[in-house]
Length: 235
Ligand code: GLN
Image (cartoon, rainbow, N blue to C red):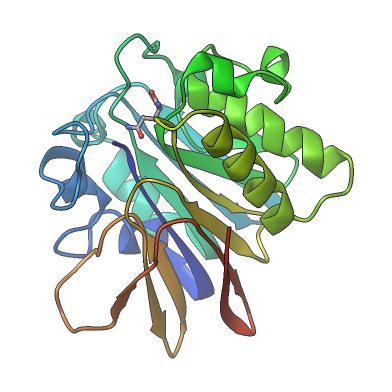
């Protein structure tokens, strides 16, 4: 359903995920190419980046194409670690900023692509979520593990397998970062990684067709991107 993307490497503007590529998140907000659930991602968008010793997060509950201020903001938001997402709200979920990724706690930024039935979210600190949206509840679960000292990768792997294992219908594709690492899981939807000399891209679907550098990540995998490279393991 939703589409998300992240970058770790040499400093780049957020427009490198959104407006610049032929099939960046702006294009994916109205004509995604690999989306199996939902057709457009018009129910909000968000982005996060690390600059001036802080985490900066911007999110709206309107379509990405409707924000006239976004182009300048994305072009000037420059960082070595970027994350952005566009949302197609699951039926029954509220359309509001607090239901929109990236969710944030401390240095952690978090996004979810998929759908998790309510019963599969119990026990994940759902009561601490800022919205009744399933993604906000998953974020609360991940952040609670972070407060207990879990690493970013271990925390999203745990929440993915807990929610995914609780209901065969659950789709739990998570993307998170702490500014140093990008962690992502696949559980029911696509994910691609692309390694460049300057860094690594992670995205629900390729941002461009310029070469064959996009590698499809198998389902039920945890991907970890650090300055040392890309690592992944089965969930
Ligand atoms: N279920 C989440 C929501 O409603 C994510 C939806 C999606 O992946 N499109 O926001």
